[in-house]
Amino acid sequence: MIRPRRSLLFMPGSNARALEKARNLPVDGVILDLEDAVAPDAKAVARDQIAQAVAAKGFGKREVWIRVNALDTPWWKDDLDMAGKAAPDGILVPKISSVADLIAIADRLGNADPSIRVWAMIETARAVLDAEKIAAASRDSKTRLGGFVFGPNDISRETRIRMKPGRAEMIPMISHCVLATRAHGLEILDGPYSDIANIDGFAAECAQSRDLGFDGKTLIHPSHIAACNAIFTPPADEVELARKIIAAFEKPENASRGAIQLDGRMVERLHAEMARRTIAIADAIAAMAS
Image (cartoon, rainbow, N blue to C red; front, top):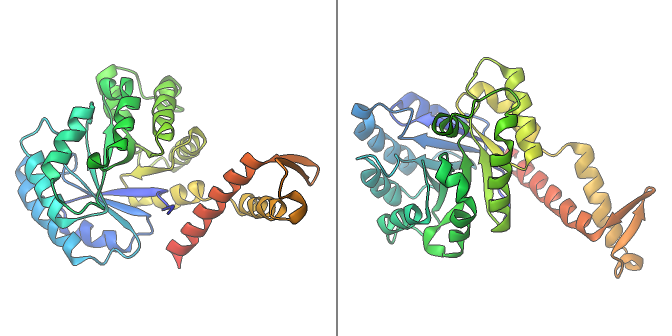
């Protein structure tokens, strides 16, 4: 089943008001955060508040993730214990750099609800270099791996590659990670845009994310939701064309054809496969809104 992941908004677990607000925002998903947005002395309170928020439900059709702390911190085990019991849709783990990290997470989760997906944040040089190995670990169902979230800010910090508008310097790494996920049937989301007030800059980066193959984008401010959803929603004319392509191939006279002419253009079976996904994601987005 295709699930829209155009927009996933980080909400600090230490802020009870923000957790309540997350239930009503027009996002495809919320990420209840225990990491960057939470001070060290507030981790325990945030953990309890997130557990209560997930248990209370009320998020509607929104996907609910919990971001735990990284494996090199003293908090990750308690975070995973709570998340395993709370049973969100997903657990987002920062700074995954190896298959061994995924196995450590799987071991800690143990017999937690098997529907919980683990999402790996790719934000270290080693993770980018080994992206294909990490993605391939999804073949072992024990890892629960659902996909990647690309973390440009941490990658910039570690590699000293500068973050500039257009991210030209990072495109090779982004494409490498996108290819790794697609080779193993996984999804990949882009990291957040830090210049909160620059909506035009954010929209440009969203469009770039879409064109580079990302399934959606993680956000750090509600003001980015509308632009993100609009950019990652297939345009109406694209959906109309997709339906037209499917209808053409379903005609009896085209049943055995690998390619047909449609409105003066050559259309192949591969275009029909792409059209089916466009229709599926458009229908899923419409269902979210209903």
